Image (cartoon, rainbow over all chains, first blue to last red):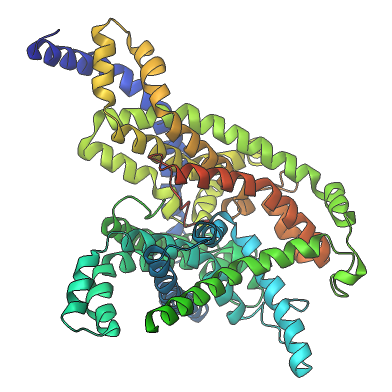
Length: 286
Length: 271
């Protein structure tokens, strides 16, 4: 049996001799990353300031009415989707963590399945719900004699964004709710607190970091959503669609680049907040 | 009594949320196998639309599979060793590198695609090959493999395992392939499922990076949503579901066995 000292020397031996090899092992990933992410991102930043207006291209986000409207519309849409998705998912998520019943595991699976659906597919699912041949059109035709169609409006986008937000938020809320200390609630109840006061004064404050984290994830996803908007927002300017049209139709590279850098910063900051609040489990890249 | 009522209210609410997510999927699958969706199910069931999709879009399905497999190969080759180095190194530097690798998931795909086009769009042969799409997919999926493997490595004491192997005379290569890799297996498996699922469904980057000769499945889907009748678009979506649902089920099964490094939530950027 080797003495403690010997093991220690072995460890040091393993560590130092390996450094050159470790460097070689991370090199391929570093090269790919530097060549295809860092260099292009730097180039994008340069392109954003290389238009006729120079660095003032960034000011266009405020001075150009079309950009400003698109930015405001996207922020308003993302904020309202976040509020509704977090409210819905908190009720469902806390319920699923608190109760055990037959079919619970299946229900959780069904609620989280849509996580990996691409945005385009979610756009199409909204068409199945609210398009001309959609479910809502059929039901309203039967009830009122009129087809209610809103897939291609802001309401349709809202439904689509809600669709991809709910699974993500439910997972984050469930992770936070699992850590709740039931004895605190029992104490509150035994002291005579009503169910509503227990929710307001005990459960919600304890969930707060998880709720902020999931709000940030939800907001970032909604801000950057392209696929869903691509399918539905034929007449609506949300920021990713504005970037897309600036680049492909107007060939305004500086404009598209400065808008995408702004958008990238917003989503990155939101996700950074989420990650630092909720630890590494379900946050950010999951 | 009061308490039971609140239980059923909450259950009903949760079931309604579930219905919101599942009913459109069900409708879409139904439309894909219905003779005429406008008339409804009484017009009869058919596989005609699936056949039509196969005729029109089979190449996009093959290309998506090829890119997913190539992407997995690249990510395994560069990501697993990188994760091992990060786990060995630890500390602030490793944290910083990990944070940097995750950036392509935090930044919208549109921006990354734009950056790639501005930088490499001039290399015609590269731009018009599917390798250009592969580059985007590798960037986007790499963090999932790295984090998945890192999670396993940080949950086991692999350094002690390596030391004992070294004290028995194992070389660096032997230690990596015979001690570290077998221990990483659950993380590698979970990461691989995630990489393939994300690659097959990736749209945001791919739409910008594709050319008329390099269309992947989601690109074809967007195309069919804009220009095909509802039944064909639905049948195509059904084909997509058939491809990714087994991957999703496998991922959920792995997450349920509580293997460290299996994450239930994939990217927040798939939308």
